[in-house]
Image 1: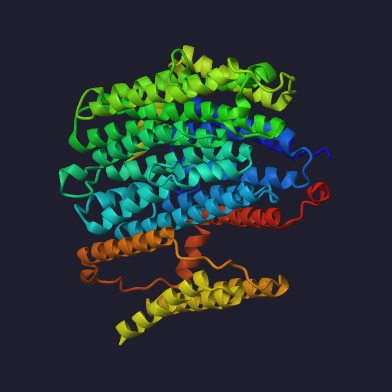
Image 2: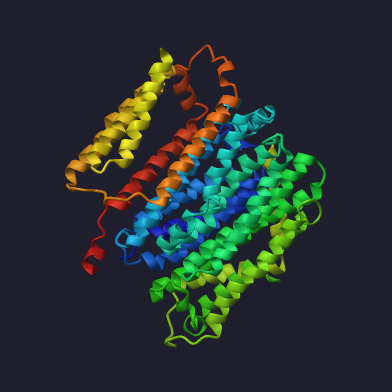
Length: 465
Length: 168
């Protein structure tokens, strides 16, 4: 059944990527749609990241959905999710943020259960939908409390209103609820429990979208609301519970637990899910220094380096994890296996996939000269001076530790013998995406300058006051 | 007096929600859900928000609960849930919910909300309509997309994959 829907979506995605790219190069500040959306570079940055991942997913899905009768529905749901993430990236109003959040989430619940005859897919969809609904309810509760203080749903004035209420327990509650609500989508420990099950059960192309795109949308929401609030508001009078400390502990726990859990996984998708959790921990490191700097004063340079590192790592992680998950999709689609054993001798059977996975894994571990190295360097540099230097040590140890399971898989693919050496046809759509992703990972590793500038430019407009 | 009514309605709302989740027969669950919606609607009346209350009754009790009952009638199945024994996860869930409730109660009582004087002019329908059609008009449009997306999602989940059926 020839079907035009994926090509329409691909055209639309490329067109919007080019538009946003042009706007990112020649930005005009200001707001459109009244005051509900802001027209800034932070939105542009996350718009590029999320649309790029959606484009990867769409191009590689063409082969997978080719024989399925519901393919047009698949692509329309994908387009709604993409639009939701895009609006979320630009949202300047809590109401718009919530509606965009729902527009992003609702289609993914149906997409996670797209393979209706597979019990695991149904379980994943049910679990993901329930946890997603819970997190939406928590965010809505936080928004209503914030509205109670501020009398407005505009993010910037609401932040100022919360900041003017020192040590109000209800304001602290609202912030805590935001942490929990966004934390679910960002899959930060201890709100990560759903992620491995959902990623494993959902169709793997959709897991790619969840791990590489909707997760990043959670980060932009957190930057716009949470970071803006916490930099001006101390949660409690006790300095031990400062927001920077809270972020630091969350970052440490998230990366350590994600890496340790990834080491013991037998299934590739679960391994990638836990590694994705660990990467969220690295991204959080940049938040720590930003919150600390605005809370204490000083350390401005480090704060900017940290946030640049966070944003750059968001971009890198989207590409690296997107590529790795899509390799897992192709292996599952062709070999019908998701266990780690299936990757033995893969280099001889599917050379392009094996090479892509190798590059993505090396970049995820932070091996120079790949893109992941630079963002990690920025993140660890930012905390090296000052009270959080232990976080840099922990991050480096974690990276070294994660190399253990990444190298183990790479060794399996290249050194081990497979049961058969029969060549597997690697679908064109996937190969194109792999080529673009590998080019991005290596290109941003050798010439990181423009991407770092792009990330850095997105920072100052976070707190338009 | 208002306090007594408030607590009675709260019992109806929370009790209905518990029945909706725990009932072995889905019909009872649906009725419990309708009861919970009714309790929430009455709470909105009590809080001087008749607009929200009326919508709650029309949309949730009038449409959602009735739709669920219709679906149950069309899809005849004797028992929807297998008998689940009490598990550690369940206990952990109840404890977490209890702890969250205690924490919220502490936060709300520490915030001294009773000292806040309520706004003297409650929102009227006209004002809500004006806001929706002017300042929040883009949000309303995106909301329409959310509805479209959920309808598509429902179709995706409900539509039979014919080819897959043949293969299976």
